[in-house]
Image 1 (cartoon, rainbow, N blue to C red):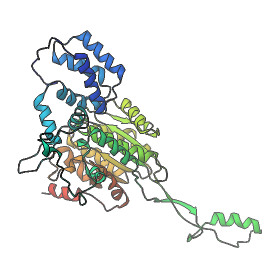
Image 2 (image 1 turned 90 degrees about the vertical axis):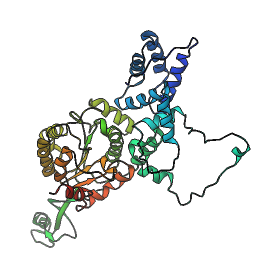
Image 3 (image 1 turned 60 degrees about the vertical axis):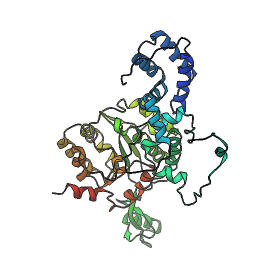
Image 4 (image 1 turned 45 degrees about the horizontal axis):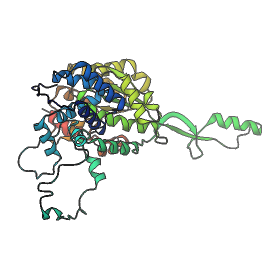
Length: 419
């Protein structure tokens, strides 16, 4: 909570009405704020007083925020609503269409666009000069036949910059995605009418019906089986928005029949490893992720990738990686620990998995380079490195799974590490 000077209170204040309006703005921004919480917030402010802005901030925070991922949206909405005029002007300017010049654009902070749209109630700022005379009735029609559709724009939009309505639409798009996989050959044999290998056991068993005379040799061929999908998702502070939407995609894959995966195992990690596989088996995506959020207590915390991978390799790798599993590692690679143990755990994970695919949201930047020590330690031990910041990048993930030669951006970034 930043420091702001206290404001003089008017004689005829409307604090109760303002708290109710603030709660409605939070509800439009996606927070589950009902009448009961609004009443509790009003009673809490009456008990705590309105003498210090910091106390007022945390009183409303305690009453209206129930999940860690909602804290950032609450913070941005609070700054906009409770008199921060410069910040409001900045957010409104972000929502205005502007001509890009030579100046560098600063992206909106996470949750800021959602907060601005909630306060404006879905209405963008009025065009300059609107309603000033008869020329306000003039309309300009623009032929937009060659422009990208709203769906195509949403497919390529960064998860971090989505509004509440765009996040809801993105979740519906992710629920419809599929992640097909090809079966892998097994060492076991199965009866096959077109097989080229004789099945002597079935042949002798069939000859008993004819008194021991072999009339037909039963054929067989190598059987196929479906691999497991293991997802390791980073839920630290820098990955919060991406991990929520990626887990929606994982939930859709886990509950979609006919994709071929034998089982889907999901783990979250930040400062500790948490198994959320059983929670993702629920059919309702919101209920499943809510249960997973209650299970994982390190949402938006620090990042200890090496320690969490060590816990996975020690406790879970033999249970879930024994059938040629495909591993999806979703993280930005910004680890606070030592790079040496992280490289060892990544090497062990790579050797245990049939294919290790790394999804890194930082690849959304054109000039991304592996400068962080954690990224440099992890890069040599993955089969493919791909972006994971939009719906389109998750749709393209099927190519990396089905094509063993697909390495994504690994070759380009590995060349930067070469001496």
